[in-house]
Length: 195
Ligand SMILES: Cc1ncc(C[n+]2csc(CCOP(=O)(O)OP(=O)(O)O)c2C)c(N)n1
Ligand SMILES: [Mg+2]
View 1 (cartoon, protein in one colour):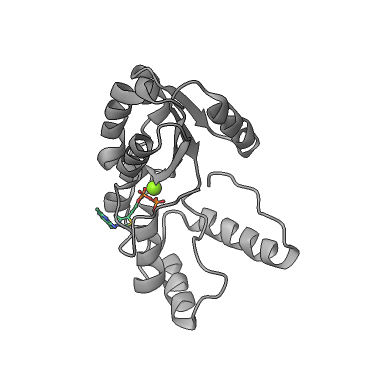
View 2: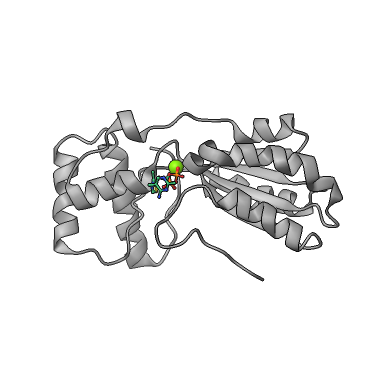
């Protein structure tokens, strides 16, 4: 198996083009890309047109694009909370709920929208057994803190500041943070649900 990341700058946009390049290099092997919905809106959906043009030439047609659709530019939202103490600024951070699976189907590809945790495994099974490229549109929760297990005092302080200033997702963020803390103690993966 080979893997590629967008690099230390967390550059948005390479996921789908890299996956297309991988298919041209190894047309006989399945390729999986995992991308954010912001990146998918920037250039990923255009890449689907390229995929629709070429996929029938590939010996193994499986190319799975998994989109983490949290309707948010989430990495930056959390940086602003934890590094600057700023609540989510909806004007710049919220992005539309694009129906990526519908878009894929319009292009002749397969598309599956996954809205519940119980549907995740079946969606992967379907995509891995499909006779064409598939877009898996996973609806995910922007309130889950994407933080390392140990955070610094400064990060904790800025986090609290961002909440106390009136973050629009405060309730959901507290709920998911509490779930994470319980999971850390019990070792169980917390349930997922949009807040
Ligand atoms: C080309 C580019 N533009 C902007 C940024 C700054 N940036 C880093 S992460 C991010 C948000 C990414 O949003 P999304 O793709 O939806 O992924 P999420 O963090 O929500 O999982 C932004 C704007 C970047 N790294 N690269
Ligand atoms: Mg996002």
